[in-house]
Image (cartoon, rainbow, N blue to C red; front, side):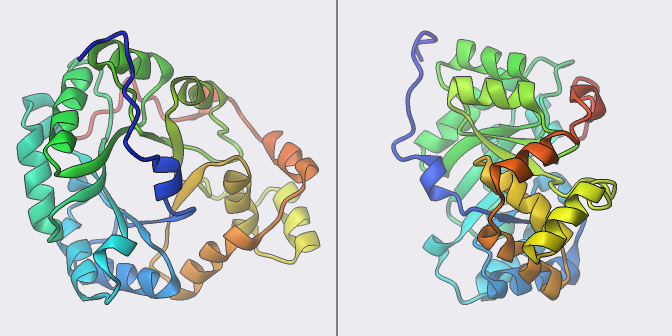
Length: 278
């Protein structure tokens, strides 16, 4: 590939992605299958898993029995660290497909950049080959910072379709989101509800009371208002439906600005330069 050009995807991931996704970590076995079935019944069409979660087979069991046509679902999984470092990307895709019971993935992400090994650009190149072979619809990354993204573009000539990052109102991730926007990378968020402190923030409670919705819906609506697709995990069917209803919550510009003021800065996010998961 010519490193000086960026080839656009044949169709836009922005229009293909459902507005809110169902996460599956750390659910495994029958618990994962039940949660995914309940989520699909509630209306979720974006299902997010990863090889390292150990639940692709359980997610696949739900996909096989949910009764929703395959083309109506958007299934994401991720490259685990051991396959990333070894370079066995094609094998990793094929094993994920087998466990999920699918012929093609909608989105395949590098789970962590693992910069100590400096293999992420090569892994992305191999993922593009899997896309071109018809095994994957879109290829992207997770937990990448701006300089990781720029290295990928410089060495492969193509930007990831998606960068899935840790993000909530207390971790607005402005530098990473600016890099995503600059390079044409769509932003997804994991752990979109934070670790508890965000839902307890007085400003979140105040907006929820005024709008007449739950605190979680306020926080998810904050993501949606900025064009970010949040991936929220819940095994509780009632909570799943509550979260999904956030797509109908309307926040004002003042609400978004008030929530933005919860941001603690980039230093509060997990240190992806040191994170290593295999």
